Image (cartoon, rainbow, N blue to C red; front, side):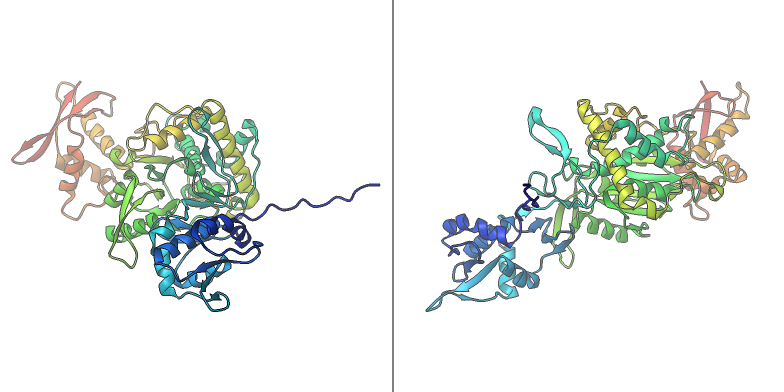
Length: 533
């Protein structure tokens, strides 16, 4: 005789009303609050007590409920991972799923609802907020997190549900393979990236190119977002192409799709004031990323401060109060022929794309469509591959990258670079080569100067003027590239600022001769003496 199979009993819900009722007995003893005897009815909270005691009692009852401190506000998280702000109006009815407010009466306590004024006082009380758990982020997939302390510290995937150690709430909508072999993982990444025109920078093999490694680093950085404490500065990720249609926006989506699905994208605001509002909103909402797609320029003092500072000062919405918000947002920008100055390059991880032919005329073995990229099966494969890369690094002793660390971003670049290099790829933070499609404005200016110097004899080094360099750049059709934002009549002044930064630099002319580029102020204007080395 066989015993019929039975379905396993599901684990009890640890955040619903039933769990709150079961947990209420010790709370009742600590707060002298009436408790139901069998745990099947709602806990009762006496309204005839001071606000501080009332708020503390409500907070203790709701400690295991899905309501959290989230930044400067309170929020709930549902089973799908959706975050909803908690308001006083909403709290009045929402809280009645977990407890009953009562007032003493002659025969038995009378149950009554609270109004929004009392709800607001409870929600604002420190005694209430101190009892709630702090929510740092919500993820619909399991991401790597730190576990253990000291020598036992290691990287594992976050558990499903709320993790008190990290403040991460994981929904796990897309389960994925957790033991994928390294060669299979590499095949998935290679199959998805191999046809993009990553700038060669002197390398004929695609997977040895710096920009290819930078793309993998961008994907790893997004996947490992939870490994970095809040406030960790993260470099801007920049996708820079030499022409439209090269795949910069698609590569950005490839980086974000595994962990986040279809990303929200917007252009860069035209004014700094509008940009500051966008950054404020991202910081307050604790957005994991902010995409600025198809930018004409990425130069911005607001962006510079945002990516380098661990804390962002912003004005809370509908308030005159300023708040200091720990920064967690990764800024991502895309654009064609972006001017990447040396100062900006130090604050960015740049993926350069260089398509020598007509981008629109290209054909591909694999056509990456939104339907394919954002499909759960595709995301699961990429997630499994990225976790395989992280496991390989973890099992190798978690080495940190030592060369070419980004100043102000040492923690992020050392860890992400360490994972990428552990997979035998090129260093994604290595200097971008001048002959690549990177700083095209700087490259064009050096080319113009090199041509002018190359036309002179070795024994008669020239002395160049701003006007001569300006005329040659205009004749060669690169003046707009070198000084794209110069106002009419202000070209000499704009070019002069560029030339001033080259003073004392050792450069090569068109004959491959090394020379020093100098500068001398005369009454007639700026001149730049040349000295061959």
